Image (tube, rainbow, N blue to C red):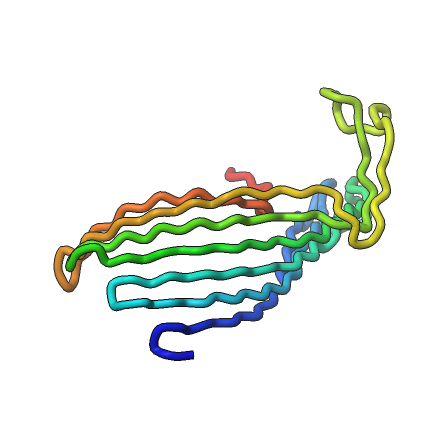
Length: 193
């Protein structure tokens, strides 16, 4: 816009595929799953002077988790085929930060972000007895959610602060604190022999 205001717009997509297998034996299997996502991000920057920079932004991500599919790899495998449907969800956030050069060799950056995650239908959520294994015998009820209907929402604030001391042109000492909300986790079932 001008020397004090600027803006960035980002659109990104991804398609992650995970495939694992055990090649032979009575438990030979193939396991596949994945995640497709599309993310849009807008940030605006304002620099009132050389010592001060303010950033305001927002982003939204649409997550489409692929079904998890388990299949036997060999005809003699004891593994049964199974498919577990995955979630559709929106993840979004709004943020503001203020970077300030308080002295010639000192800078502080403070910021606050609110992040949210909303799981949406279509889906069927099964309700089980409290404190009991999730098996058919303990199934009490189910709730059907229509396409786009909210199933569950999680959200929270993410404060951050950092302090930097520029010792010389080549060295700096930094201290920071950040609290993050994580809504999608990668879980890996690995064993080390």
